[in-house]
Image (cartoon, rainbow, N blue to C red; front, side):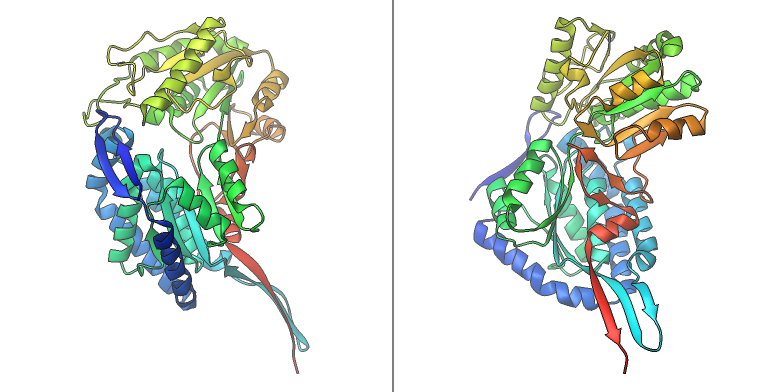
Length: 457
């Protein structure tokens, strides 16, 4: 039996460890979920919604403890208060639209025929959640999957080992049956085995491109449906008519918050030539004022990265860029220990030959380039293997829409960034993945259509 450990980025200690389920135990747990699914789906929609909402509230009651646990597990400063605001917002929205989103599509109902399309649950949904926003990313699928009548098994990343356990305990205390929502401690081998054996009916995975390829490889030949949100290299573009102060404040926060460990964080910024120098000057002032340190300290604004190996990758990208001619604008912070505690960095004189402008960084670094016009900005924004979000800063709505139509991405923001709107489909293109979560479309992906063609008489 293997052991899964969470190594805290605060001090490198083992914060938590759990035994991974054996293959036999994992298959048994999935079997229990399948047996429980029909009864769960037979309950009224209102009852399922009520129980899910109660589970969400039970998680909220634990928030003080959760904030501390998140700091220990993945390094987010306690001053930011955890994730319950977004967690509740997403679950509540999905509950509010469930009746209309899951309503049958009536084609005809006359004297001769009744014809309609129902949305029916897949069965057992596996959610494989990441560590960077472990509660919010999990609830994106957990809440609508349960509301739609699926049973759910949740596998969390080892870096946030306690999150799934917390969620399951809270939901069970609120009345959701244990076999309907299960947290499972799984290693990669058993996870792949469950998928390869068609043990589950839908897999939602959020993580790396390599992880997504492993999911697809495991599912090969099974026809198991998947939702995949993988890497990102999200751009911001500051147009010549932008509100400069708002653009700097928001884009730099979007690049650095959570130590840059955000799926839709800003990783590259393009600025109209007329605004470039002022944008960079303001950005450097903001970042230079950050306080890097222990996330348990209420004064800390930038905590450690979740793991030393993540920080090492960011350092490598920065070093390679500087050696190739990039200019680093932020002096090394005294608290930078060469390990998980990493100084934030802004780079200029960058180009797309550098990995820091091409590969996912997932850390507190951003490259900034001047652009001469919209055409050049569009070309650069599209010069990426990824496509999750893009952020445009302008006072001209029509211009933003015209540019947005030409950008290869899942979401276009105007005058904001790094936000997930539960009313809109959360989706990506290119190597960012396939599928879509939240919104009415999220329910469509967590159910299958079933047609009824009923001749009367």
